[in-house]
Length: 225
Image (tube, rainbow, N blue to C red; front, side, top):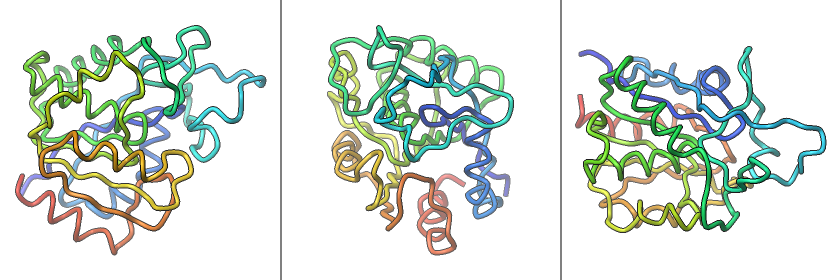
């Protein structure tokens, strides 16, 4: 049985290389079920020493790895070109570029069976699924979504993505000790999906891949194989 091909969407201040490193345990845990393909967001994140440490995904998310710079999928603060999951904003910047990057990845590296996102990447995955179901992105044909430490965007212009519950099968994974995206924020995303599956772990802001989690992942994935 061929493994399912999954497009992987990293978190804010990460990139494709660093996310690949951070999900090594997941690749090993599910190597028979999944082939994970990583892409890097188009927006470069500033790393000035003066940048506020309180900026939401800075504290517990490692910065980028390899030769690539830290990246993001959109900025909630257009002037500062920064992002915070809790920041209320009317408009964001960069999202269209990121949607184009995913469209290009699907064209050149697809097809993909599913899509997996972490943190800001998981919030972005919810938007990609909405675009797919509204038939606004005809290249997208994901059969399932895995959202780790996901949340609803607090940006006013993004609320259009949450108007109708999404039909795509989804697995939502979050940690009770997550200090970056509290589990309450991940729970707020659940009503945006029809019949969401949930995997709760006792840890923090990471993609869980202990042996104890294998069965839940496998149970979710087996209907697509």
